[in-house]
Every structure is written in structure tokens, then in C-alpha cells.
Length: 265
Image (tube, rainbow, N blue to C red):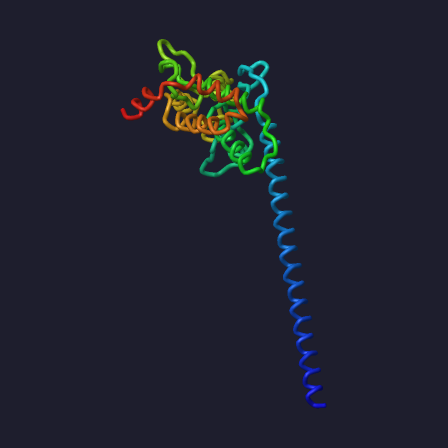
């Protein structure tokens, strides 16, 4: 009898252990499943957020070109570029309300190739990671075409040297400058004398601003030229997705020997 009882209790104990192990196994499986579901939702949410950001960025691309003018007042825009802005870091000893307002609220639309180039890099990298389901190829081609117009006009054709801003002819050479800032700076001396105190109050010196803006006439540089070469590499890797941009870029950037010799100097 005692032998039978011991065997029965041992059987019951083994059964309880098996049941306990099964419960633990089910709990672990549920935890793993829930964790996987959370990660999946998180990835889907991240991808969705990237898609939203992509659409927001696309809304900031300039759809057409126009010249800067005072009447009607409008900033210059260049088709294909993504908008960026110049902010004035104004501050006076008293940190007055007017300087705070100008610092926070006033900005000038800028048209440079540097920002657009980095936007294209971010778009391609997001596409590579699968965070963007579909890239607007027409919009992408428009941005690349805009960037290529910043190629240095003082260099021989085909040399991949680029400028931050577009160039304008000055006597016998080409010089890059910000057209919208230039328009505003040229406007300052024409303001009525009665408005001079308002201009001077936040620490704006018209003559000083004019002198500073003369220094904005800058030559081509390694930074802008290098990001253009990096863009060319991305286009080469994805020439099947952006064939028009790849062909246009390779046709316009050919003389690398001259470029690297210029860097060595």
C-alpha cells in the first residue's frame, strides 16, 4: 500500500511539474509574441513617421523659379531647391523686445545647393533603409538639375567644382552671392531718414551690413564640391532608380584630374 501511495504521489508530483513547466512555457511564448508585436508596431510607426516627414520636406521644394523684386515684394526662388532660411542673430545689451522679435520671427529665404544636396542624401538613405516606400523621381530629378546649375563658371567645362550660391557675372569673372540678402541690403540705404532709428535700435548698422555682404561674394569651395561628388556616388549606386539624374550628373562632371589638382594647390 505504501509503495503504491509513494508511486501515486510521485506521479502526481511529476504531473504538477509538467503542468508548471507548460504554464511557464506558455507565458514565455506570450511574452516573446507581445515583444515582437510591439517591435513590429514600433517599426511601422517609425516608418509611418518617416513617410510623414518626407511629405513635409517635399512641400518645401520650390516648384518654380522667380526673380527677387521689391514691387511686388518677393524673394528669389529656384525650381528644384528645398527651402532654407537665413536667420539674423540680433541682440542688444538690453535684449529688447524688438531684437527678440526680429531674432525669432525674421528670416530670409535662401537659395543654396548645400541644403538641397543633404536633403537628397537623406531621401536616398531613407529609401535604402525601407523607411520611404516610394520616392518622387520627378521631384528628385528636379533637385539634381538645380544643384548642377551651381557648377563653377570660372572653371573649364566638366570640372566638378561647385559654389554654395549661384554665380553672377562681375566684370571678367563669376562670383557667387545670396540674391535675397543682396536685395534687402540694397534696400536699406533707400529707407527714409525717419526710419533710421528703428533700424539702428536693434544694433543694425547699415554701412556695416553693406560691408559684410560684400564678403558674401565667395568662390567655389571644397565643401560644396565634395557633397556634389558624394551625390554622384549615390546616383551611381541607384542609377536604375534615377536614370535621368545619373546621366545628367555624369555628363556634367567629367574632369576629375583638374579638380583634384586644384585641391592639392
